[in-house]
Length: 139
Image 1 (cartoon, rainbow, N blue to C red):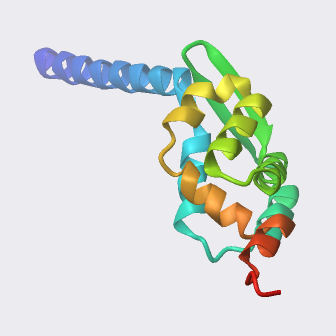
Image 2 (tube, rainbow, N blue to C red):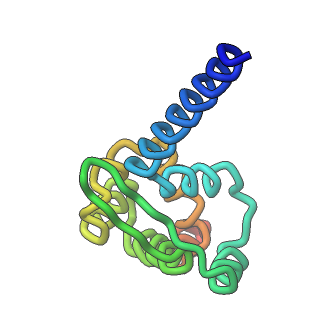
């Protein structure tokens, strides 16, 4: 009976230690920007205005913590920045450069994010300059 109880206690403590290690490593590397960018890129029919309103009400923040760098910004501010940067950029490369200027702590995330080009297309289509460039040239 004692051996059985000690075996159960040992297995429970080992599982608890594994979960604690997993939680610790997940807290060391947090990248909510990539998750949110994938969410935006996968739903191009969303209304940017509605997303910004919802973000104001929920007051959710996006966190990034990797390689000793930590950064946090509200979703509303992030969406506002994306729209402003997309409006000022004629190409994806210019969009990426403006984002790097705006968020230097996110350099590795911005350079490696595969969904960022889709986000540029999505957000650019919702801006004034995006509307103007999409008009037929015959006007």
